[in-house]
Length: 521
Image (tube, rainbow, N blue to C red):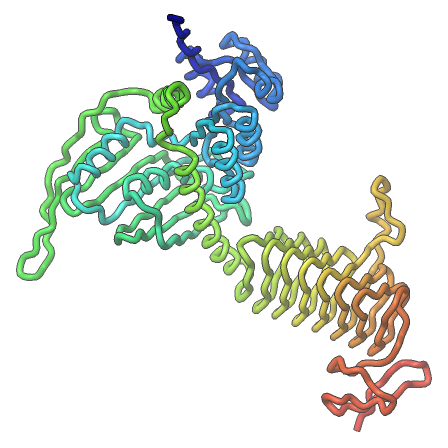
């Protein structure tokens, strides 16, 4: 009979040794599982390596090292998804700090990679490993609080102030994770409001309201602009209320209030009861979380906060951000609509009634008038002026130097240039040429307007045409290079030999200078 050697204990490498990652390094070292460290700052990585007597390695070296079975990702949030997928594809188990990713699409990519690799995927929702929260979950599931009615959490502090993410994404994932776990469902309605005080669009304070299918209500209040630190979760049930206050000493971190509401003569009357502290076994939540990851790696057990749980939290964050963006942009641009995926930079203005649609970008210094429609995937600016009532279709870039008067129509994928002879390796920003487009002009799909030429009022550029010279008012231009093939009226109708608009009846004449003029009656 051949004896089977016991499997080697799991070992991990920590990618990201900064503000929070250093705590992972410390804990995995204490658990005897730290194999390597990595950080974008080589000096920091070297310091961690020296302190904990492990090698500092590049990410590629870690992924290629067969002796490392798991990877802990504590890098900046924008790198989470890419690093997690790379590690999973290398056959590593992954523990990624919150948030799992920055979009649901990214999260789905990480989950798919984990399923394909057959590896553990765990998300760092730390408070799900706190003894007080674990006890609270136990009490809720045992019915000790009765049916849940209302939950709220405050996560407040002075700092750490970030610029790569707002307070919602920085602070709220822990609280959303706890609330979803307690309710056992996902919210049907998510509403959010944010206040931006240190930066025009990055929220320093946010309040998120959740409504669940079972009638439970919740809100999450987070701020990094608060005079004191507070980390508190309140759970209100029909039979009792519980408070998890992580700022209190261990004997007061979890307290139950068996308050009751009695109805007397049709009037609800509260009966207050003394607080009852709940006994807890003291431990460091991060140490328990790290140990849980090692246990899951060793046994193949699904983590308490696995990728699916991380995706649920991310979904709520995305919904909250989308709702908050609507509120924010309504305040920035009263009467305008800015889609949640669009980006409007500081210093841009948008008039009432205007609509900026999916994935479009309005750059600084751009002034967009009233009742303008900007389609999907458009780029406007910097320092561009768009008149009232313009319509800019999908995939159009309006570069610096272009000015659109009122009522201009830009067809899908039409092109404005701003340099006559561009080179990727030659900076010619000082050579941008102006391209004024007159009132009511129409530019067809895939047409190109070479910079430095003026388009007259109510002219019409045919689809695919290339404009290489000034265009007279009302001229109908087609071809490559574009040539005048006729005249069009104010209403966009092609004029016959009588020069009378078939739609409006307006009459025109060709002046001595060869331009079209309306006859005044």
